[in-house]
Amino acid sequence: MTAWSGRGQRYKPDAGEPSIMGAVRLRRVNRWQAQGVSGELADLYVDSRETSAAEAHRSRSRQDFLNRLTGDIRRPGFAMVIAETDRLVGCAFGFPVGSDGFWWLGFDGTLPRSIEQLTESGGVFAITDLLVRPHPQDQDRDVACRLQERLLTDHQATLGATLVDQAEHPTLAALRSWGWLDVGEIWKPISATLLRVLVLPVGERTGARLEGLAYDAWTRWPG
Image 1 (cartoon, rainbow, N blue to C red):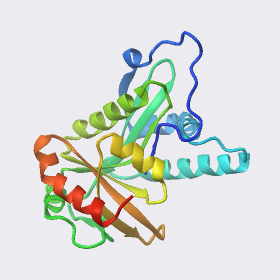
Image 2 (tube, rainbow, N blue to C red; image 1 turned 90 degrees about the horizontal axis):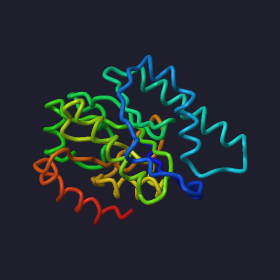
Image 3 (tube, rainbow, N blue to C red; image 1 turned 120 degrees about the horizontal axis):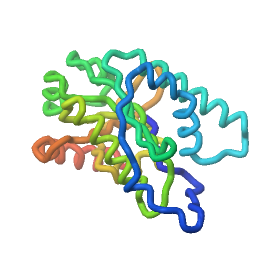
Image 4 (tube, one colour; image 1 turned 135 degrees about the horizontal axis):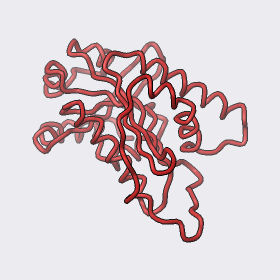
């Protein structure tokens, strides 16, 4: 997953620029609409990352994002929510986790029973990307929280799930600050990468069931 609210250089507003929060609108887009704005989404992805002096690196990163987006759009149940003012300021997208539990293949150890039960009931939704344009005064956090909540509640999910490269410390820190819980590690042969597993409970009851798991994972696998 990519969860960016700006790495490295922070966004510097012009003098007198108003707060964006009151003007931010959330809007669901279908797979065809997502394809139509894929270029803008890729620009948001690049803008949200740490700026690089190497243009070739930026181009590769942009194309990698577009390839991932294309793959996700083809998945059953794909959904996206965008945040916009007079321009695109954020987006979140993903797809439902199948009740067969295939998405969890490679989890280190035994998948916690509470997560297994939520998966079997069809209550888990994978958020594969969450992008927010950097903004001062912690407003990017507010946009991120609104996006992830809207995407999950629209699909009546009780648990959000995502995978993050364990080397992406800024992403992990951002997600934790947005309410995500770290519950372990997973090995995905297709990417040959060890990934952190984070979940986002929807509702107090679900959160209470997972708090102990997050603490246990944190003590076994410090970030």
